[in-house]
Amino acid sequence: MRPVLVGTVTALVLCAAIYLGSRGLHNFDSALAPYAIAGVFLAFGIAYRYTVWISSPGARRLFKKGWGAALAALAYTWTQRNRRPPVDATVRPKPNMR
Image 1 (cartoon, rainbow, N blue to C red):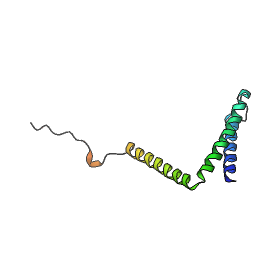
Image 2 (cartoon, rainbow, N blue to C red):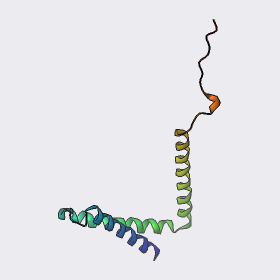
Image 3 (cartoon, rainbow, N blue to C red):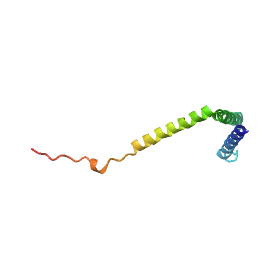
Image 4 (cartoon, rainbow, N blue to C red):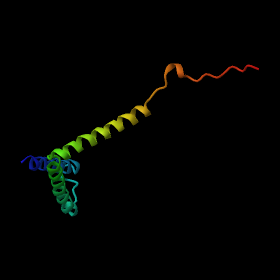
């Protein structure tokens, strides 16, 4: 029951995004309707299958470890990019001792 609920919510969110993105279907091209319908069914299917896959214990463990590793790598790159040098490590020109 839960995968069906997740898939339905995902499809409804996509329908709302299509509705809001086209300004209440005012700017919606009717030639794109089959693609929009296919996209909604695809979103439902992906969310459904992903939820079914995650419900097994082994896949859930892989999911948690994978996201943990990805977020740890992201945090590491963020800290390396935004790292400030220590105050004592400022580079000062050496006096000319000749």
